[in-house]
Length: 333
Length: 154
Image (tube, rainbow over all chains, first blue to last red; front, side, top):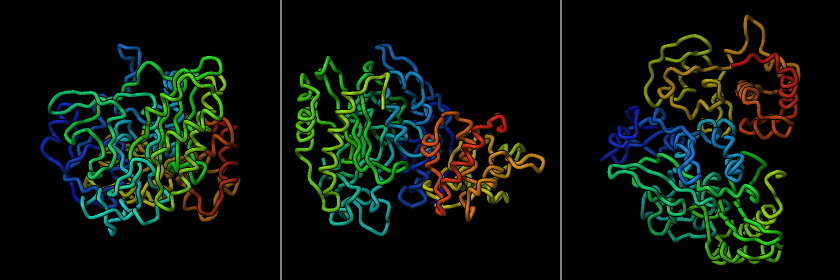
């Protein structure tokens, strides 16, 4: 780890003021990803601004009937919060599918959004990586790509976003609230993370001098019909090869509205409005689900070692939709 | 300043010192450095009653916190129920992961969410045992959970 200075902020304004104009300063909360990246010399902050004492730990109702989750709420506290379990069980399930109990006890909601890819080439300072040094090339392309993207890739980067929590938040149409020198603003979850394009080092549409203060969940939580399917290399404590957040509104055996988000396949939680629109007013049948999966994966391409992800993603989407259609909140699997 | 195993301990560390390194420099070497990257759980300790990974925690950020390590579990020469259960069930081979396993199991019992053997397996998945003592670790934890009056409240 490089040497750095450490300061502690007591309120949001102080935190924003402290990071202004210092492009290599970083906020730190749970530290579960940042400290690791510092040990690997990927992150070399001049200064750490400890935000753990900011008053951002509440989970409270919003005026439109949703919930506001403070950015410092731990992953554990969020997953087991009674209102999250009751109204947004998809989010609870997704969080508990990720990391370990110790990491969830440390990790914050804001930090989960800001965590960086676990691409092995990104972590290896001995190999070129466009995220670490823009323009030097991507070592993953043509390398060992088992854990890499199949959707939304570019010739500059094929890394995936590692979060489970964010996949559920994307499906739920959450809103990210940030605060910066220009004031407060809201970013739709779908617009928060970016595709790599030719700037894979810019991962979010939050400016570096802005701080995440909260994530808002809209009123609709899809607590009756939801599923989070995560496929990984071991049964627990592993990143997703493919994950699927499925949320349905059903009437009888028909789907009235559907939401789908994929993890482990792209640089951001992957949504596809065309596929979701095609779910509306369809029977909850295997044929419907396979058609939707094909639609959702129509632009997918593989990079060799991750070719298995194309059929895997299709099966995971079909399974997620089938589970969501079958589940009701009282008797979930 | 840390409240370390019940005793106030002043601490003078550089900002980049992890809690793990700080503990070991205080000669509390029961907490183990396994991977040092948050992947193995050997460095698990309790901070304010919650199990966390000390290798990914900066000591300076825990100023004023209550920290419990494996050295803080035995009382007056008597092993903690979890320590005794690990001995009774032969829940280790090399022993390197054991302090982290026991601190993690204590956190799991405090959390009170595990009901079944599968719950324990899932909620202990952050602690790896390369000797493969998992069945006996599970048995040790189950034994203590069945007699949870042996575990003092945090």
